[in-house]
Image (cartoon, rainbow, N blue to C red; front, side, top):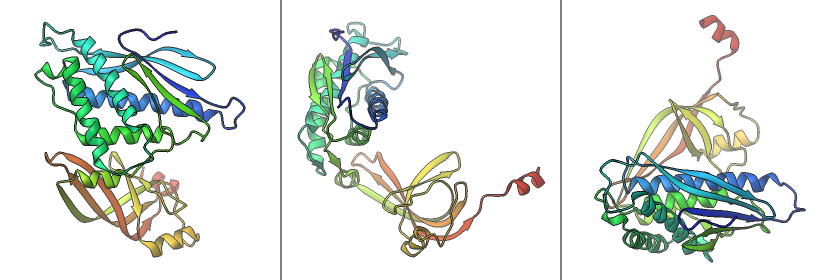
Length: 296
């Protein structure tokens, strides 16, 4: 199936058909589709926050795993400019934006410099002008925060693949290859676009969802209705945990001191909020079933 002229694009994963762990191909494809959906949603927010965008599955081809998708828009406002084909120009812009981001990253090994992000930012502004997006009164240019977040999402979708796999993107506006070797230092890039940073320390009770047994990744915690990812830098406690002197089970809670860092960009828009556990004070075990029954 060939791409239609207007709004179709393809994600292709070429893989060794005799390679182990075949599920990685499907997991990566699903994650890439979700990443592109989020990218489209973030881009559309800068055009008109009343519009919703979805990806529609057009076809799947075998050989390599080739997924053909199409952009579709919902909730087009009645106030849309009469002399512009709203759906057409937005669809073209979304296709071109994905190509711009991927094409800019080809050949890059390590992304730590905000200059690359500025190039993508300028190219997106140019694409908005070429497609007529900038004629829409509600349009606001996409910012660096949005670009960094979505590049990181796409990059994480590729991590499960092997070194011999190849991934590419096809669209009417150009083709690009995904760079499986690309490493992104998101924190360093955020620092380059940060205008103000606020740091506070707070005592918190965090319920364990997913511990880190290796010591170099973040733990996942439940806090209220949300989820917090935090690295534990209390080295003495961490060493005892890794040596099995401390037992922590899912749904146990850590009473701890947390360093909270909030970064804002030059427009004082929120860039990120990070959490770091500097001290684990104690562990609150998960209430036993007997205790829960007695409370009932």
